[in-house]
Amino acid sequence: MSPTRSARSARPALAVSAAALTLLLAGCSQPGGDPGEEPAIGAVPALLQSRDLAFPMDAYLPDDRQQGVLAEAQDVLVDQCMQRYGFRYRLRREDDSAAAHDYSRRYGLSDPAEAARLGYEQPRTARAQRPPQPELGPNEQLVLYGLDVDPSLQVPTSQEEAEKSDVATTVVGGQKVPAGGCLRESNLKLFTPTKDTVGSLDSEGLRMEAYARSRKDGRVVKAFKSWSECMGGHGFTVDNPMDRPPGIDDSNIGSPQAIAQAARDVDCKRETNLVGIWYTVELAYQNRVIEKNAEKLDLVKRQLDERMKFAATLIATGR
Image (cartoon, rainbow, N blue to C red; front, side):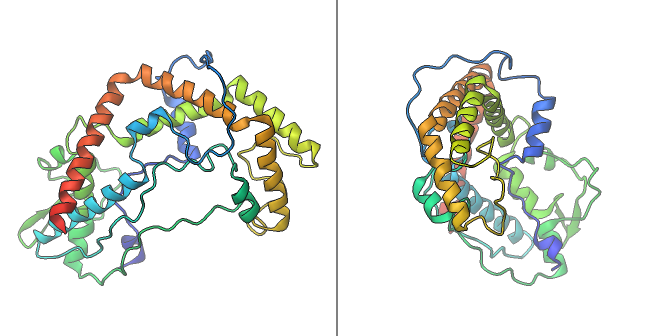
């Protein structure tokens, strides 16, 4: 199998890049409310570590544990599809994570112990590993991946539509292979079974919109300035707690220099309560987004609950 084909994945994207976020905000119709109005906030708690913070939008997105369950369930669906053609999908993996959402770097580095140990380096987290990919024959590859098609070709975007369409399909052993093969079919069955399915990117986009607006909120901008002044008072010139500090790159991200600056970074966040302020402001923007998009998000929540039940059934019967 070629590296290009083996690298394909049918997993849905649950995170949006910074570039995608820019496009999202530029093109949206402001579903979260008037961006010129800063929402009211109540008392601001004193906070430092952000790892275990909870957000109202969490209810509308799968956490790390749920994503692991969905990944395993999708493997079951791929295997069921492959069996229709006399093959098996042997890349099953079981989730090894019990984590909820991890917000450890949501507002920049905020864990004193992590800063002292790693500087600005990201901690490495264990993930379930797949077994080595077996060698696949030509027909097996075709069934798994489907035809190579022109990216501009309009293929079905739900399983409901795919079952009625012959676009980008082929035939193996007298049976129709769906567009995108078993990998894409498994994705559609689990994540977009019908045309009215609300995609996870819809709720993720709303969450990221609230986050982006909170970064520009006057109270957060003021907190950034206080934090920057604190850092400057200790000889570090840096304006944005989300940017990599000057002089720190991949070659020295965990060096004594980085550790010293990271420790001061966290101390200044404590002194200015940057995390407490930003978190409180972001909560207000998320609540506004939820209020303005209540009907859509209620559907997202119902469909996520249904998807998790379906995934649990697949895993129980597929083992």
